[in-house]
Structures are given as C-alpha cells and as structure tokens.
Length: 207
Image (tube, rainbow, N blue to C red; front, side, top):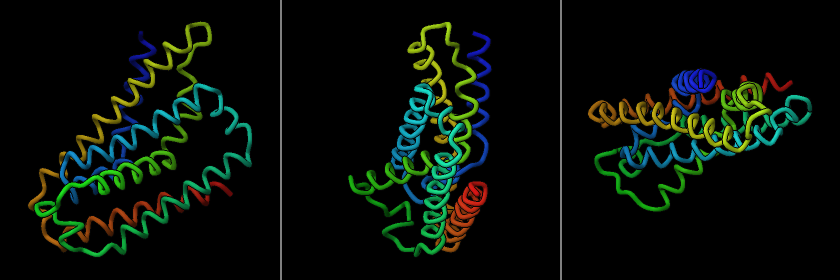
C-alpha cells in the first residue's frame, strides 16, 4: 500500500509539471469549451493507457535495451511535436477557430482534439521516460500482475485527468482574457514555441 501511495504521488507530480500535455490542455481550454478540452484530455489518457500496457508487457525494457528503437521513437515523437508547434505558431486567429464564446461543438472538432492529444501523449518525452524507466519499478513480479497493472494504470490515468482538467478549467475561467484575438495569438505562439522546443530537445537527444 505504501508503494502504491508513492506511485500516486509521483504520478500526480509528473502530471502536474509542465509538459506537452499540460500546454495542450491550457491551449484547448483557452480556445474551446471545457467539455471539448476534456475530450482532448481523454485522448491523452488513452495514450497513457497504451504506454502503460506496453510497459507492463515488457516493451519498455526492450526500448531501453535497443538503442535504435528508442532513438527512432524519440525522433518520430520529436518530429511530431515540432510539426504541432509550427502549426500552433502560424495558426490564424478567426472566430471559427479561436473565439470560445462563438464556437459550436461538432463531432469533427471533438475527433480532431482527441487525435491531436492522443498523438501528443504518445510522443510526450515525459510520458515516454515515465513508462519506460519508472513505471516498471512499481510492478512486483511476486504479486498478481494483472491486479497491479489495473491499479497502477487507473491511478496514473486519474492523476493525469485531474491535473490536466484543472489546467483546462483554469484557462476557461480566464475566457475574458482569451477572448481578445491578440491574447489568444500570444497563447498560440507561446504554445507553438514550447512544442517546438520540446520536439527539438527530443530530436537532439536521440542522436
């Protein structure tokens, strides 16, 4: 039980610390309604579940052992973060995309947000490091693996959802600030620059 509490604390701190998932949640909260931002968060949670599953299956250790595989994963992940950063940075401010008070919800927007956050979750360097190096340390081979996996994964996903939803909600509460095009442009450019930086660091570290 003490080991599980430590894991929850580590998971919460990891989810709370700034990273691509946090930046995306803040941006989505600033640009969309809260419920749509939460759809993006669910995409990130889905990515976390997949990473946790791969880690439990021992693929995380395989990635660490195989330099070429780990290098390839970081290169692809970094490339996607850079692409997303450029996309955010050059995004045009218009009523359709960035004014929350006038935005209508539809299935295509929700799917886009889900897919975007899902891919960010898979390419998140913080998540990759967590599930390849740290997550397996909390699994005891002498205890039932399935029960441990379920408990650890639920705990990790819950911590991530609470933290990301908190960031998104805080952005929504600042809707008056973000309703101004100059301010939302600042948010997009800042988010884009941060994503590009994360991606560049990941690509450089893959060499």
